[in-house]
Length: 123
View 1 (tube, helix red, strand yellow):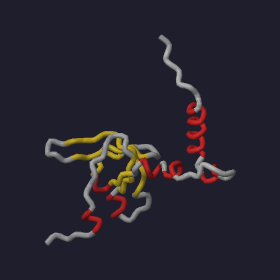
View 2 (tube, helix red, strand yellow):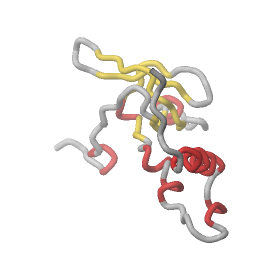
View 3 (cartoon, one colour):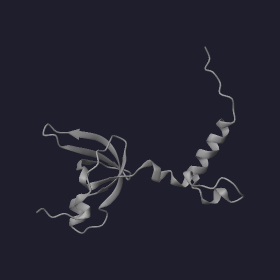
């Protein structure tokens, strides 16, 4: 019977170009060195004739990770990045205190266009 733990039972996800993922470099991790886990954007999906899929990753700090295996990646869903906006209280004097600067900028931009009548493009 094959060895199975909750970690090995987790199915690999199929990632798409421009997905944000958390990547753990297995060589650095198993060597016990720091800096083994970091956020990346999926640059390209590499499909081999054998059917294997690998990913070229663009770390946010710069550089390139070539042909990373999906087993060492976890999707960072947009809902997690936007949670502070989705859950922000929008009433009261301190509503903006818990929001990030990016959330405030987005809401300010939306407020500037939401109350305006849409204009038709010129002919």
